[in-house]
Image (cartoon, rainbow over the protein chains, first blue to last red):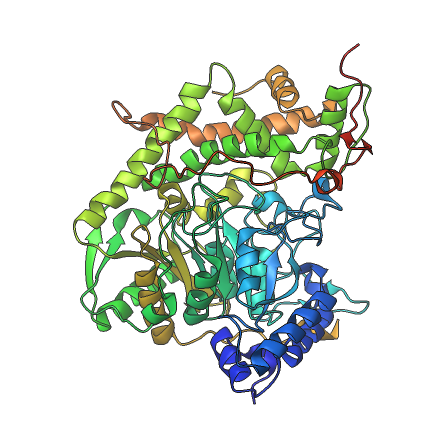
Length: 506
Length: 95
């Protein structure tokens, strides 16, 4: 039998129903794997007791042939989701010790369906980053290594050598799923934070349409862009998990009152008769030949499965990333104003209340967060608001219009690369110029700006043996087509062989 | 557009973030790198384009204007760095 930690969610669900193993055994196998993988720093908080008590309750329901869609399935939760009575920090020092007295809608939906919580996952601070290097808990080590690299499990529980980043901001989620430390994980995506780490780790990540998933109880970064979604090892698992996460919520007025489709049923639909667009503007200068080849390969796979391939144009693509770096920091500067040392988190005392605010925020926020709050404050300040913020929102209208025009011509989905490169090493990017790191999101950020759904699916390996992903972008509220087309890519590419537990000796 | 060091200090104060004097030059460099990156937006003709206000066109949900929550002082205050009875405590604001 396959190791319990190596099952897919679909296999585990079926095995639990058939009583081939118990939810408690499944939880224990994961708790054990997590303990041996502490050197990866994927979990910032392990909750083994909670996991075992939730698994016990699942076993009782399963014994009576009851239970929800995720009954007994052990999951990791990104630390951006507030979890009742369990420390939730958003990867920031400023929320140290914060134990929410409430549960986020997304996690509550998962628990209502029977899922089991293994712990909280590392992430870039306030989800601001593309490498998980901005976390107050330190970086996450990717389970992937370049061929012939010197990275190994050293003595004293440390990793030796220059390791790779898992991507970000959902770096802990992606690493935990790829390293078999959970069957699936929650993640969030404001500019690419689900899809980029999924592509870097050979996992599947979907950012649903804006409004598909409730944002209530999820720490806010940029409210008009933030959406939660799952990271899993297969397209089918992604469909299963997203269905449980989604749904109308009276606590979030931007969460739509639409029925949630049976996403899993869409997985086997195929792409026969679908029109898939290839946007010429994504063929950027200096794109690596490997990415180019992968994209071409993906196009061929979809064509071979019966899709019609058409070239399309999204003329404002190149302006999405600069517009994002006005809109997202502006919204962040406003959202993060709440961290003032009064109601929760840390406080640094000062001579008066303003000094207390300033010292608290200086001590609590990391460099990247401070930088983005300051940019946001500047672009919203008197005299600059129209030149920066209003202009960026107008450009956002144009970016969305580009997609609408393509979809109006009968295109069902758009195929692009997920990232401009494979994973890079820690400390390799963005130390001098922050924009170098931002360029990671060049293919993913347009999707957030237009509020559309996007999925990243592993499609192959580069010359160094590292995973590369393709992205499919869909029409608003048509995640089903993404699951159908994503499954064609997964079937054609073959499932990625994830790395073995080389870290377990550390 | 680019910012000078005086502006960096002003933004930091507006953002309520204390900045050490020795950090001002590198902050200035980083902010200017971002501002120069977004400069390319000026190439786009936005004449007559409406700024986006809602990414998904939808009618705002409404609910009954009634009390749905409350009377939870203990929960509201449980994470406060400083409190006295059912109040948050802050440095003196009014002389």
